[in-house]
Image 1 (cartoon, rainbow, N blue to C red):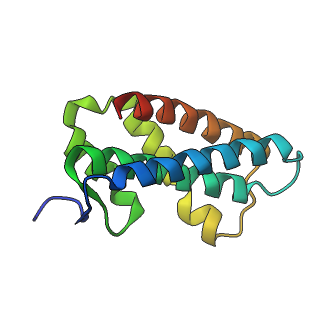
Image 2: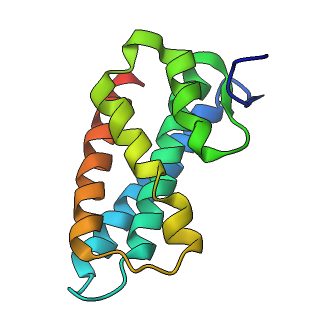
Length: 136
């Protein structure tokens, strides 16, 4: 598999479970963002956004090719492109990459994300999620 992203085989119905997880994290992020106060650390909100995006990506690759990303989540967009090819619009590719780029920072870093940052990423996720669910 030289030149391909790390992947793991999954069963044909795996995508359904990942879709449920993706939707649950999306709803949790929406609720947490709604309740977040200006000036408070929104890293937990963004963490839920990231986890939702990963699960939406997994659901797409699992349904189309019975594979999911296996290692570094920064490689998940590459697997999505490998599986979907031209079905992955550049705008959604950018959204997915942008969201995933926050994973390490919000889950392991010390900088506090703002409510506005979380809101922008949530809007990206909502667009990505709409498209993903239409494709599923």
